[in-house]
Length: 67
Image (tube, rainbow, N blue to C red):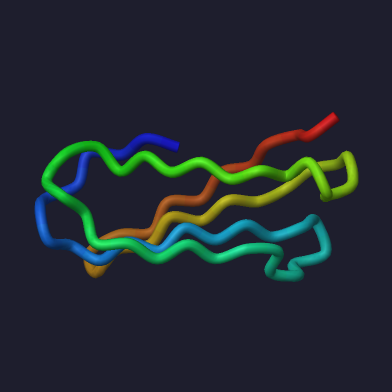
């Protein structure tokens, strides 16, 4: 997931399954460039997942399909 964020902002990336259960949380301080994090879902079941990127000023939500 890529998002242009100002330097020094805290950002939290959360992954939920379709039932709303939190699967993983990644928190990081941005460095003034694009927020780019990766996560391995190889141990997770195939299906639809929700991803949520939160900062002090905004929340972005999207979904992806693992197969």
